[in-house]
Length: 409
Ligand code: HAM
Figure 1 (cartoon, rainbow, N blue to C red):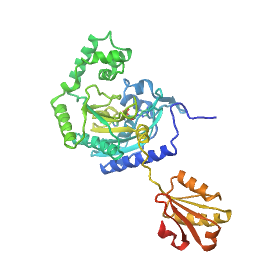
Figure 2: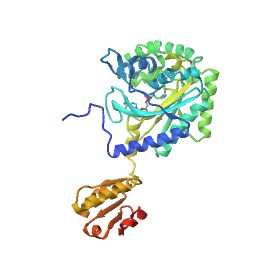
Figure 3: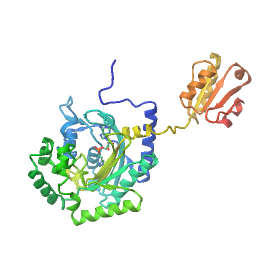
Figure 4: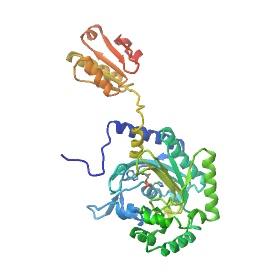
């Protein structure tokens, strides 16, 4: 048997219903916040991710689906969405045009990670990216947008918040952190030694317990913020509090990607085990320039759809019955129900059974398919130009004249 690759999954049945529900809520909220759909390719030049996500990240260091294509190009399946959207922003000259641009996207991302519950090699994200707004109100809007999505989906979360400082605070903090790391260089792991060389702040994110013990005493970014970064961070906290969004300041939250500055945040859930991050994002004011564009503000987030699906699956099924299931008891009724279905499909969701069988069997199938209404034709109904009707929600059942059918649907 040919199977899916390790860490990859089909989405069907209950999962596809949940997938559609999540995307429709996300899209609705994002549109209300002024974001528009953007679609970028799944495959990009490898350099794009090396330069944006960063050499110190696990994503670039260990997890890229990278290969040389038939034209000898070094290409990579996208491990995340931000880099491609920023590339599109620059390539379409929106940086030079100036103004404000807000996009949302959803689709497959690929990371060659060790698969486990909640961690896949192909997974789906919904995300937004906003360009051109430096005001901290935009940071607050993006966080409120994520909170609104989770509220609508009835998902509880903890919001972790940090500031990674700006170009005025970072060099001073970086030097303090380097001094600290060097004092403890014999105790830290090899990954941290590598991170020290490329992006020292990423050491704070290390999962090694011995390292974590050491970093408990490391200098803290939010105590070393420039006046501008500090006032933005204070203002962000104030806006979130005023709007009833609870958060915890987590000074070790640096995120797994190198492009962030100032605001960094993560939404975590205690309902899905160790892979608890359900959404994450932050500000990236240097990224556009770094990828060759004209300096432009940027902020965004992305959420993992499969992790949200896991949470929703563990909740009581609130699935509503939907659509019509139409069937016949005998072969002779098939022409009739086929014609009725074709007609009803102009306005209703209709599933036809082309198998003549007993009513009890049809009722069972309609129930499994979660239909709301069952319509059935037997010999008598055919003779009298009638149809048998059952509402599977309120159990109402009756025989109705064909010409009155639409009034009952
Ligand atoms: P990220 O934190 O790497 O951020 O991923 C965002 C979300 O994707 C995570 O919180 C998690 O829910 C989900 N996720 C990540 N890896 C996996 C995996 N292997 N399996 C299942 N779900 C996963 C980003 O990707 C940034 N581009 C977010 C962003 C947008 N920042 C600014 N704009």
